[in-house]
View 1 (tube, rainbow, N blue to C red):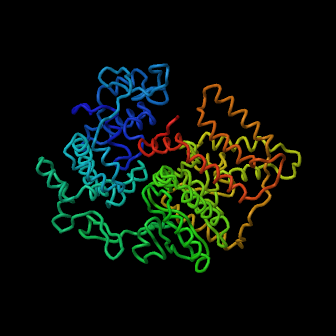
View 2 (cartoon, one colour; view 1 turned 90 degrees about the vertical axis):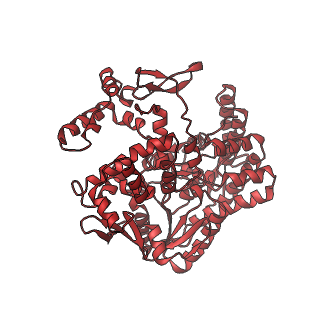
View 3 (spheres, one colour; view 1 turned 135 degrees about the vertical axis):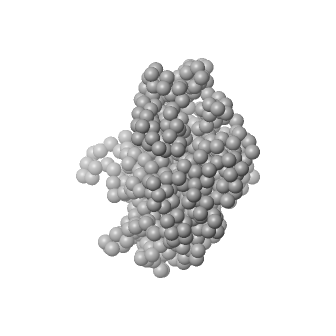
Length: 580
């Protein structure tokens, strides 16, 4: 950064999710860890490895020492490489440290066209290869830093580990990188990168030279669906031992194929009579193909399996419904097609709930909108500890209409202590309204429980690699303990017009206070109407289908509003919500 004139924002944009690393990238990670901790670790390592060929890398730049002296340690001191402060118009902004002057400046957007183009490459390995071999500033930076990491990692075998596998696992599990060093090297291209290193006069580790001389051109490869790695000690490829308690869907599919599949999803036999419905559309967005496979999968499971896991091993569980298709239908005013699509989505989520065989959903990372609604309708949920889950439809001018609004209401009312006949149900309904209207997102599986997205009987896995296997065990446990198909609800309490009027008053006050827009108020009123049962003069017991019909009516109505279409288009273009 210092030598080649990059900004802190540019470095963080190049070293984060674009290359399969955490969103905090480099400098935000420093702020989370603390500059004092970093300085102590670096000093300790420098003193501990006097013979290391890259020992000088632990000598931090002078400005880091100055930051520590001034107490600019990161989040713990509310200022490190980044700091929140008021900008123009008293608006809170995240300012960035100028490492030369140690003064904070307004944020500068990192303008790196190569990264914008690479966003369209979903596969991390392909994206990484394209970026590293670029001839622009991004390619120069990544080659300089990544190539040094690759050489260093190879030189540490067998000093700190016997094989490339241990090094890669340590880096993936320890740093939360998507790819370890040798997986990165394979993605970049071993032969091509070594040739470039030699041209630059860099010394190639002997173990890598021997590997290439033996005719091996990658650290990992597959033969007949078996994964192998190159063992430096024996000079040949050896099978990668399977991890106990881990199911790799890709390997299962290569060995035994799939039961059924289409462009959006596949049904995979994961053994012991359990099937797994795997999403594999772009960002795992839910479209017609996915809904069709849910229908096929449940029919197949009913006949030939003991239960179903709904999960995948992509980057995110699901970001929700396919917004692009929805926007096109709305702009073309194809209301009948949209109505059919919403009905199909509702039927899919409800079929998960009322399957005659147990269904366990295994969410992880981003689980938004329709992905959250599928999670809500499972018999059990086995979530990854790191799950970001929520009903975020309000952010694009809509309400949850795949059963999510209905289910959150049911859960809220069911949480009223049994036996308390005079309990006021309105606070429970109000809390549900706030969760959906504010598009709250839980940032962990444990927090999801407090929001009502997970129940007490749901569980989570600390090790993400074990998630599918853990979910499979949940299915087997449900089947073994005498699974009984759930019954459709017709006893849901609808509070009627008095509760609706109270919620509408709150919405009106928020609008008058300037906290929400006219369109926000409209969305809020439609949501409130569903949660209180529509036009009812008094408290009434209603069915799930009654609430689903209200959801669908509100959703279609909002799709017809220009402001909603603008919000959807803005989200598709920028990835951020529009307030209009």
